[in-house]
Image (cartoon, rainbow, N blue to C red; front, side, top):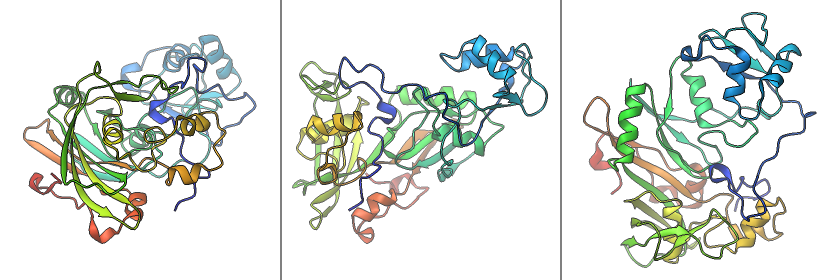
Length: 360
């Protein structure tokens, strides 16, 4: 069993206060904290011509023009190409270097996530667990979008959808504005078919099952972001199919096909039918588990309660209309930490160009 010391941040993309009194999960870093490395911003050609103090104050909420100007004068903000003044007009492709503690990364940059599909309109990555899709909060952290833009520095990449920080698997980005517009419409119109793999607690007794249960905010929970099944909730349907059972660990690998897109839908429905996801910090657990992590005072028996550092949920396949016509099915191999929990020879996701070969 993996150690839970340094377990993944329980908030991630879903950051929200667990009680009415705790409204802000992240505070600004102390000014004396020095970043390990500066952050480099490449100026998009569409922003060329703006004053640099205006550009940076608009890009970073809470950073006023006067504070930007001070940072430029003290050398905390500079250009790689020339001497910079607050009134300087930024240039297309100019690289601005930021040595501002809350805006520059701390710690080593993570490896670029594996590319599992690439064509002239799309690129798809297999996001590892623990990586944000997009940075959130007031302090810079590396997200998939930052790393993707390093790999494709001359392109305007667009995130088409998001995954929770703890969820691994497929993230698809559009490589041009037209592809972004077409594919976001496809997501909105539910023309994208998603399949996830989840390791759940217990040995599931059925082979296939569809859950039709409306979802809304969980009643009487001290965790404000928690959702639950309730009669007045939004319509939600998920189809489940057993892939493999693992009696030695009392776990079942289940394929999950959501027909709707409600917050935490798969996690809520699996908990509702009595098979919560292994490692989930909210569903299938007493509220004190999540609240202790939120308060940064983990329970002494946290490892025994969770069993795994993160929720074992993986975005395995996506079938979506291609901007150039037709349909493409993308596949992301199961995350290594989930493979390690089961016998690899019993289940392995292989990449296939044939949609008929995708898990159904």
